[in-house]
Image (tube, rainbow, N blue to C red; front, side):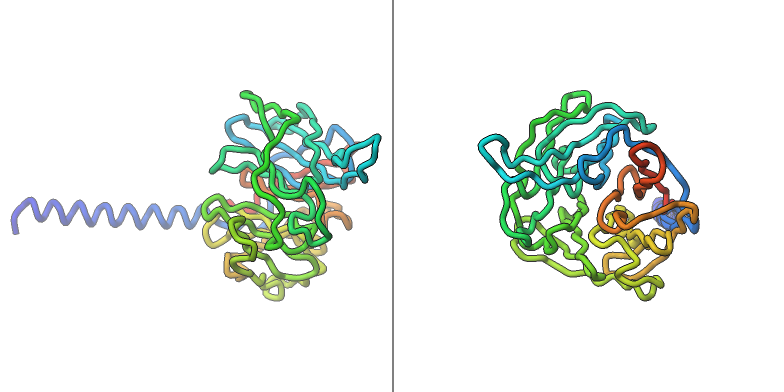
Length: 298
């Protein structure tokens, strides 16, 4: 056999072995932690306008953004139908920086790595509770240093595909889909905003996880970005993060500290997934409560 062919075969074998080793390393790294560890704590500096909702993170600015929820007042000759809900910015180590009123009843806030925008999804994006103004998906304007502006722009209007009026959808930048957990059920709607109907439906195997629909966060499931471990759900009653794949199969759990005190509002607010951490609101810590960022997947 010519020497060049021998060398080529050796090189191919070497690259194949390296690729296999790399895949094994990646699979080993993407491991559910049996016990969650605290990555960051963010003590809220202001009383939430109604209730704290979700958390976003922008790596470029090393800032967290926390959105409050709260319905707008009825329009009158003295007041417009604009929500008083605030969006707050915090540093990477959890120090308060600023707050602005964007005018939306926020349900989910996230950084869209495709559009390079901070975006918010409002209450009743589906028009399930009747049509109302300022509903949909909006981008929140930022200055060049990442500080929040009070201005915003439309991204997408109301869409019945999201289902429940209070759902807190999470965004998958790889497929450009949203995952909208439905209330009092194990169902997650998969939404493409170009369509007016859901493109798929995921039934989470809660029974396999040892939980029931009323044990877990009612309207929120996180997207982790980890292949085979994409969906993370807070089990409030058993104080654990439950991890599922995109077929709804239960793949593991990460125990949260048993001393963590969770309350009724953790079923429908005070959640988030940002900077590779699951965020849970602890209303008992600090004057206005504290967000804990938990590492649940290595």
